Image (tube, rainbow, N blue to C red; front, side):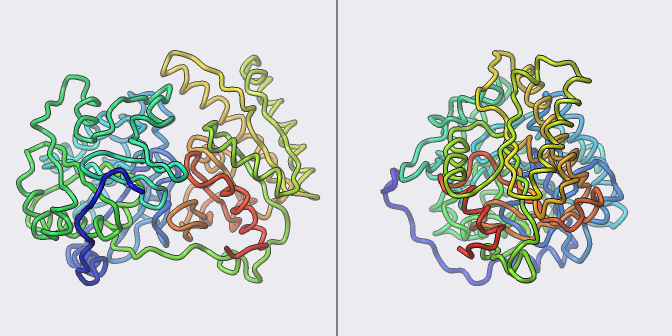
Length: 477
């Protein structure tokens, strides 16, 4: 049972993704999501993710008549000033590429579907970049944190997260108590004002409800978007893919006559803006030519949320593996040179163990707490850097595939562990969740090896074990 009562029925309106693709092709619009951790590509397929700040890699990742791509900024793992600087640099390069192609550029600030991240600071950095490049900022920001497949939906302006059979307002979830990005508000209009910390008023925030979307359709949504307060925020309600498709079509229609929108979203709305239909989960035969890998997998876990701990317990019950723990307290007590030696020793052990079994590299489960936001981020980066060094050394054991769980962990393993500069998103292992990437530009030892990006806060208790079974070719479910 859902807590929000009766709602307007979904209305079939034809092939909305095809209409979106047509509008994008007619205008040549470029769509790029600046992803604040590596998990934002979980709803798309056939697009490329760039993990480095390099315009040449951006150009390579954006081919074709409707170019769509991701740039992994990893800014959720940075202090706010650094996050703003990275967003500004990447956006400036993308606007230059758009100008070279004489094409309009749509930017998505892809944040967390449970609302963690540098919300207002990143929006302001991207708006300033557009103003510098084109002479004008964005007319409005669409706030669309829905991640439908993971049970993150917005109804009556309240954002909800499903945990098992229970729906909770996000302000009552574990994410709202995050040491770095905690918040109080579940109503997204209130959340926007809260994130303004006194700089935003309620008059600057409007919303598009499910009645507008389902009863009024694209025309009504376009009318509301056109009337949005200049420089304001528009909260988008969504409970179904068709809701997102309707809003995306309306936004592109309004933009085609001169408006400019910035999008702060979870994963699901990027698929809608790209005009993609959802793709079924990848089966073992989509991953391996004969449905089975030639070797064992390397599993790297840094996430500390309760869901991850439960998933680890199920993995241990179902999958034979060798465990190598990175003791966080012991690591932080060492100097930089000692940390490198610690990681090298653990990596060598992982490489050796990969000859005989799957290997699980995980951080110790005891969380090192600090009341300082920036200190918490520094600890997370130091630990993730060590874990990435372990993964880099473990490549000598020739793993058939690599899985990383946790946002910062996934970034560090991809960039510093596997040397990935650019990779293609093949698809997902569950509906809209857990992306499989194929490295295109990377450490030669990692080229062609599937890399699974698994967010810390998604999936049921069996999800991690199910993914390992899928990668092993032992199940197609």
